[in-house]
Length: 127
Length: 64
Image (cartoon, rainbow over all chains, first blue to last red; front, side, top):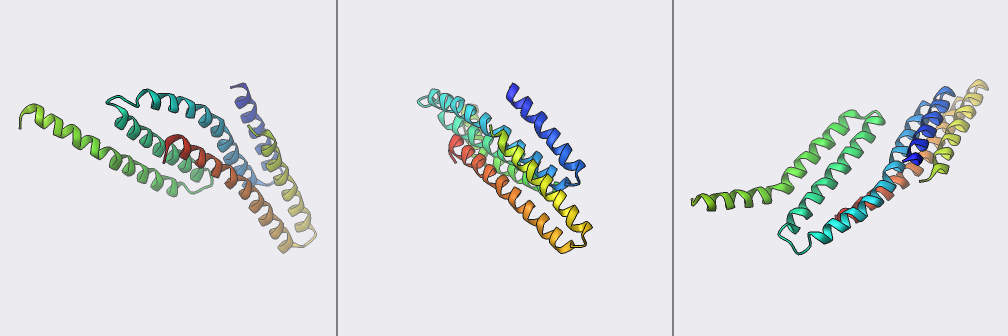
């Protein structure tokens, strides 16, 4: 965490210096790059957690649901990160559209599960 | 965590900005524009490489 804070501070200071020198475009690219560099080690650590949870859910009833929720999570994460990057580079509209596509994708991913749930409910009710 | 990369980009930015200003003051606007473009392309290449690594990491973790 200390490393992250130090890196963030260093990036902010470098961006400020570059902006003062008149290179505002480089400051924006620098911020975007540091955002990517923050996420890389976080994903490595999260990968171990995901592998552990995946192993736990392997031979249970929840393996399919777990797989789907991981996929939905990854779609959300990717879209959120890329949309933020687009906004930082000045293309807010593009970011919004990307987030809309991600929401539609997550909805499509969850449709089979919802359909199965409705079938089970219908069977339980006796319809 | 690659601190050197951030310093590299900041260094490229400063160098390109200063060079562009010197060239503009000397009346060589086209060269200033070319230097600026080259600097941006360089930084973009570094950025795209890291973004590629990030997407590859996401793909391997979530099993796309």
